[in-house]
Every structure is written in C-alpha cells, then in structure tokens.
Image (cartoon, rainbow over all chains, first blue to last red; front, side):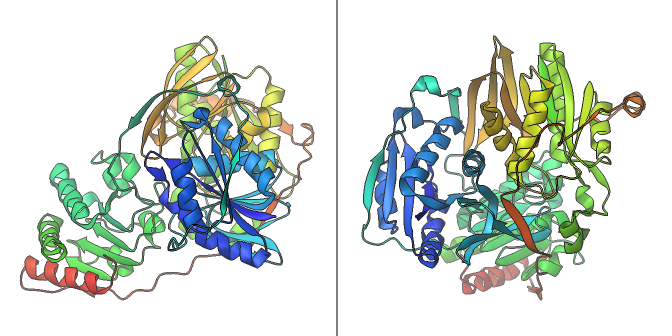
Length: 326
Length: 258
C-alpha cells in the first residue's frame, strides 16, 4: 500500500507545485501507515527522480521513454496506471495543472476509482482520504468522501507548503511504459513556448493585477502593472472587465470565470472588486487595493489601500520597491 | 460528419455567490438556470464545424426533465438537434456515473465522429467529464483547444493551450475535444432561432433505457459556505504619492510577503 504522487515535468524540470504533495503526501502516508512513493515520467527522468529522492519519497518510479517526450494523455495515463499497480497505491495524487487534472480524471475512470479534482485540502479520516473542494466557482466548500478502494485527487497549486529538500533517501525504480509510438493516437506536430520566463498565475507568490482603472490608457496601464510585477518577481493578473475590453489576453484573468489564485500578496490596481473577482482571489494572504474611488468594494476586502490614480501610484510604488529591494 | 456537443444547465454566474449550502446539498438550486457559459463555446464551435466540414450536430444534456432550457439555447444558436438524457431516479451523480451515462448516450446516437465539450461547469468545477467520457468511449482526448485547424481524412488537427505555451496536435476520429474561451465568440441566438428552438421537439432517453448501472465512487458531505474574510483596511495616507508608496512598501516588507 502507498500514497503515490505524480511529479509532473515541464521544460525546465519538475512542476514546482508538485513538491507541495511531498509534504502533504507524507502526512497522509503516515496517517495511513504506508509508504510515500512518487512517479516521474518523460523522455528524461533522472534529474527529477533525484529531486524527488531529496524531497523524501520512499520509492521513486521512473518511466523513461522517448514517446513521453511531449505530454500526451494516452501515454501518461498508461504510465500513471503502471505506477499505481507497481506501488500498490490506495491514494493517487497530482498537482491540479491542466495535465494533472485530466490524467487523474482519466485514470480514476479507468480504475473505477473516486476522484476529487482541484482539492484545496486533504486529510485521512478512518483510514480513508477526505478531500475538501471549492465548488460553485469558489462559493461553496464541500468535503469529498470516497466509496472506492483507490482514491484519486488533484490538489490546487499553493494549497500546501513546499517542504525543505533534504539528503537523498529512497530508491529509484525503473518501470517500462510498454507502449510504442503506434499505440498513441495523439501526435504533437508543433510546440510553441509562449510564456518562457513569465511567472504563472497559479504558482505565483505575488500577483499584480489591473482592471478597468487602466481604461484611460490601457497599454500604458498594463505596462505599469507589469513594471511593478517585474520588480517584485510577480505574475500579472487582470479582472474580467480588462480582459473583455481586450486590454490583456484571457490567460491573465483572475476570478470566477478565470483563474483561482492564492498568493501571499495580491495587488489590485484599478479593480473595483466585483464579487466574481473576489471569488478568485479572496484566499490571498495580503490584499492591497489601489483605486481612485474610496467607496470601491475592493477596500472592504483589502488589508492595505491607497486611494489614488494607478497611473501615479504604480510608478511610485515600483520606485519604492526598487530602492528597497536592490 | 456527426458531432455531439455536450451541454449542461447551470446556475447563472451572477447568482452563484447567493447559492446556499442547503441548496448545494439538496441540488434544488433556486438560481436562474442557464446554459453553462463554457458550453456556449462548444455549441458555437459545433455550428462552425458543421459549416466548415459539412456536418450535423446534436446537443445532449443530462439532467431532470426541466433541464431543456440550456438545450433550447443551443438549438436557438443554431445546433441542429437536441436530446435530453433524463437522469431522474439515478440518485447521486459523480464523474463515473455521469461519464458512463453520457458515453452510453453517445454510443446510442451512433456513428459519432466528434464529441465537443466546454472546459468545465460553473457549478461542479471538475474539468473532468471530458476525460471520463474519452476513457469510457476509448476515444482520444484533445483538451483546452483554442482552434480547430482542420478535419481531413479522418484526422482532426487542433491547437491547444497548455501550461506555459501552445501546441498543435492531431488525433484520429472519433475523438473528444474540449474547448477553451479562446476558440470563438459565441453568437447570441436570433429571434428566429429562438422561435424555431421553442417549436422543436426534444426527444428524451432515460438512463434506465441506456442500461447505466454505475454507482457513485464519491459523495459530497459537510457542504458549507466559505468563511467570509473579515479585514479592516489600513488606508495609507501621505502628503505626496511618493510618501504613500514608500509607506506601503515598508508595510508590505514588514508583513514578510515579499
């Protein structure tokens, strides 16, 4: 028996949010009295498998195959299933990335197992996994309990702290994928990395977002948002109003119909604070509001506020941080 | 080419914040029920693909007999046909039950080349059903698709958005495709479209007729509203904007969030 975690790989190695499940996974494995195992899949796995050892996994299953060079559901689902069998997993976890969410859903269906997607908390009660989920677009919380022997969950990034890596422990065990290229119907014919160097919203510990307040000069406005984000190593977010007005692409949208984020610091510039936006960022540790309108609802949720024009406040704040962080 | 577009009827997003724990528990939601906004993109794409590649589309919803408004919306947009899979009497629904029932309905439809879905529902938020259906049908899945480049010789070519970039992928038909918001701008139903949709008869098939026997593998329990965030905002005052910015920067550094 084990708790098994898929450590997903991207261009630059492991997806950072997967390491949250080294810490939380250990808690669950200890509560169940079973081992904590990891599976790493890709054309290359050595580096990520070694990293997994340092995060304290008891066994690291490495599935290394050229057909795993690009992510393809068919191949990755087979790989995860092989690891579930080899490890004898009763709890299967992944980070709730695009790939993590669909691989867990597919494998849960194949194993006739229950699934808790995008969980915000995980624990063991009476020897079974209990997952907390935010549903109705973050307006309702529910606990998910399982009727199946194998219990599958994906965890929303930034739900758990990442533990400190230590000395390499557990062993790396190679597994065969057992698939040839002809067994995989999806063929990737082109890959464009569009966001290299950009901090992803869901992983970010700091987010600077712009809203309708940039309307006077949207291009300049988001330049100022991005300049502050760059100084802070932050991701750039936006309200739905800004996305709908085509000031910035949809992938930056935070809120009920965009991304749900949970940074340590969320700076909302020129965002009024519609309830739909708050549903996506209300879990942020510290919220800062910059708005011309002292009655904007965002101030009711914020820890700090500056009443003022973002076109003046943002450059001043960027300078203030440049001075202090250099 | 035959396209199935899966549609869910969900609460109006503007009313989601008002949904109570009791309503979520009973499933008896008082909010205005509409077509799941993400499914409008799938419906629009179904209409567009029928024009581009000479196809017929049918919208399928699973739900109680009063779940036809979402189907009527899809018909009014221009989807050719609709069918309701009546799930009354099925009891608790989870991914495995929903995937099995809808996969059975798609099989019953016969000769389906393409199954289109939205990226998630605004109520369940699972983003899992398209994967479950692909699994149950044994079709390849292309998720988060931002553009259907071509369909030719039984192969679909799409662009899809992945974490950190975009890729072009092909898969043989039949296939499941889930679409993202980037793919199109869903049309508003025309007056004529709405009249036509209202006159259209929507056939119903029950899950019992489909022989669905799956039992749910998960249950929701302890359903509750998230705790409201209570904060007392500190408004940073100062003579100049530079002074305010400096004070805020110092406060945030003291909070140790930078």
